[in-house]
Image 1: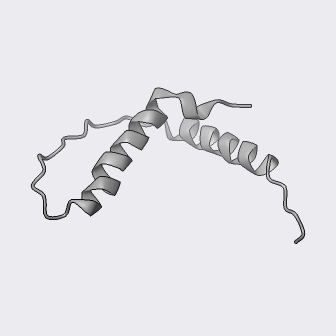
Image 2 (image 1 turned 120 degrees about the vertical axis):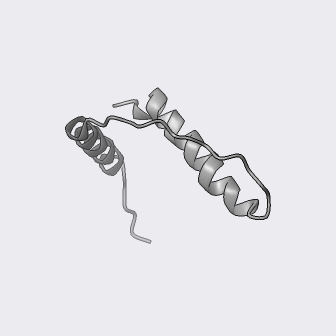
Length: 67
């Protein structure tokens, strides 16, 4: 099993999304300081491979029950 959720990049992305997207929706009338996000260099092939492994791990553990 891949522990992708424990990677620092995943935590950083979560924190950014939570703080900059989720909470800003609730504070639309508040004045917030702007945030400058550093330019990221992305290894698209490695990212694609890691995402596919994560998706495969997720779908391999799904069990559909007839209700």
